[in-house]
Length: 347
Image (cartoon, rainbow, N blue to C red; front, side):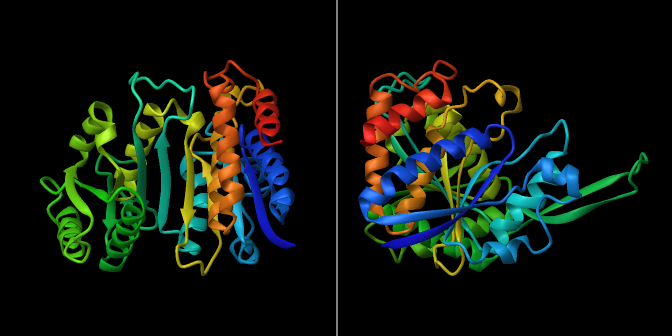
């Protein structure tokens, strides 16, 4: 029996219960599907930072290399550790060290879920560049604490980085409905975003079977609300992709349904799978966190590992659960009740 070795980082807040739920579902589907999952829990989190002064140990990246994938819950506890510390101390280093340059987030309504638009029929796959752009970390501050203080944040866009995320997005569009929306703000950002648009046009000539449309990010935000069914694959830079996918989460019913994959498409290093919702400290102790996004992220992990049939079974169980009205309204059902319903649907 094939075995996949998974690093489990529950992180902070609701990351703990939702990862526990996802892992229980993944274990339930594994053996009947002809494979095994072994998990190693790594206690890296804001609590770990408070104890040790680091979000993960110095050899953390090296220790993760041996795993087939990483399942992450959530990172952050801003009342205890600044978000800039937790993000740059764990999540971003993993994404960059393992060249997880494609952040993939699906946005569609599960059966029985009613989004704020009161409409369905949309199925959007957002592809976000994940290792450079506006989150490259290039910049600095001088004259701190004085009236002359200056802060500079520089976006870094390389031809290799832009071209590879666009090629990945073109491939996803070819595998789906053949439509690609490329998002920039080239009317205002005349260097980086014009550069992105130019590469989009060059690659479009290589993909005549894909219908390509370029949008400014503000127009795309409006289109996701007014005509989401017109969109198929959407590709954007790190910052724009981050913002648009929270909007995507909103129209699909909320962050409790928002799954994501941080992919190394070349498979030269482990990829990481996580719900988008964050640690939600305000409800972490209430037992009402929706585990569906984490379970959906786990299904994406199974598909990446080559276990598509098992991934499809998990997604069918999620659809059966929400179709019966379980887990569809934030806070209505407890975490363990939603998990039990998914497990029941699997069996």
